[in-house]
Length: 265
Image (tube, rainbow, N blue to C red; front, side, top):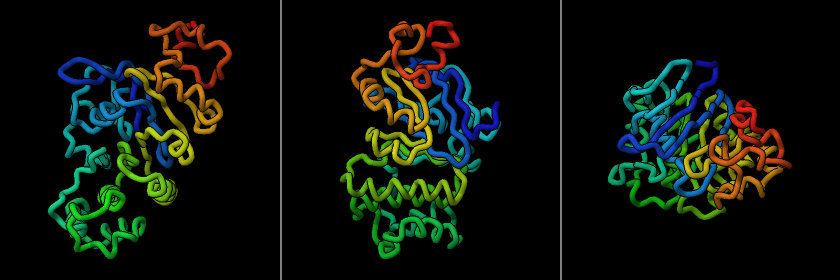
């Protein structure tokens, strides 16, 4: 294992022993935001569920804080500092905002105050049931509840799902503040590429379960057309999927590193 907070190597993940994610290499360091991009069905949610222990690892390794976590239970991982905000937010809709926060952070007021510091709009809603919140308020509560656990790694699945762009534009900068203040790492699954790259340090693009391209946010932003072509299945794939010679003319920093290691770039 490396010094990376999250270190994934050659991960195969899927359902009933059938992989939908193939040979994924990915890392997240402390103090950075990593965007995991790609179209619906690319394997992004499957990857997060496998990291969280909700799906078994079919092949490869997952390291967290320098230790292998393959086969670890979700509750054990949560206590070690891994927090997962799923795309459906998984709130207790009949419980109040305060009760949802207390379930995550215990009865210590400091945990609730930590969440409210980043999402002050929740302060006046503490007695309101989560089911009566707007979509944006529910997303703030889901993020605040995760923060109440003081995570080392925060994974967020489709934060923008069902939200107006103006709400997303308000929430994304908060993620940058969280990383800068706490030093945690964030793995952000997002379909809105420009918004994600605006706050991310690095990014990975999946298509059909395979890593198509990776690079810094600036590199990916400069090759926006190449990145978005992955959403249509048009971007060159890794070795063994499409010949890496098809990558001629693209930025070498964005070509799958496995092509180079195979001598096919």
